[in-house]
Amino acid sequence: MIDELKRVLNGLQAEEIIAYVAAQYGNRVVFSTSFGVEDQVLTHMLAAKARDTSVFTLETGRLFPETYYVWNRTLERYNMPIRAFYPQTDTLEVMVSDKGPTSFYESVENRKECCFIRKIEPLRRAIKGFDVWITGIRAEQSSNREDMGIVEWDEGNAIIKVHPLFHWTLTEVEGFLKAFNVPYNPLHDKGFLSIGCQPCTRSVGAGEDFRAGRWWWEDKSKKECGLHGER
Image (cartoon, rainbow, N blue to C red):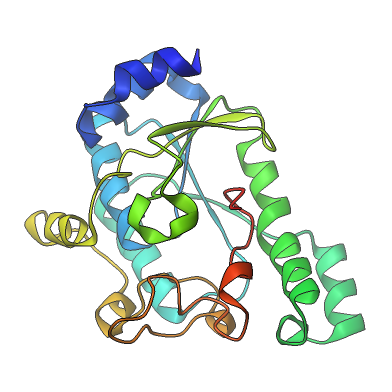
């Protein structure tokens, strides 16, 4: 099934990929948005080609005010429901009570624990019962993602992942936003190329890696949260 889907989708435009997946899988398709520029492009396409697709976001409790701003603007523009998934209260309360609100700065293990509670566990609930997960992953975002491809099987989550913008450049993404007046996070214009939780994200300087602003205090090889099974 994966090989056939790869064969069909390879060479198609992003809008065509979305339309095909929606037609083939219907209500078994889910799209995750963090309101980054790639996700805003896909939201615009979904509104035009597959607006009945289920959409969700992970509300970690530590997002930027600017992220909430673009979240509201997106709802107003496209009138598509976006389901919010929160961390499990009991687990979060234990972590913060035992280790404090910024334990993630103290060790990689603590940071991964925080990511698991605020992102990984809610993600698993969000995609449960779906067959296809659409994401905004692009190849040039990090070296870990260059060998993924437009379609892949996520063994850990037992779901097909489709990345319609996989071969897009950042310039193409920004051009699409401008051409169609798509609402986007204003932090993007201030050097925030990969936007996550506020305490764990900074702007990226000239010449720095795309994801240099995420968990900047850690060694580069460890800077993934595990949402996409990065190696």
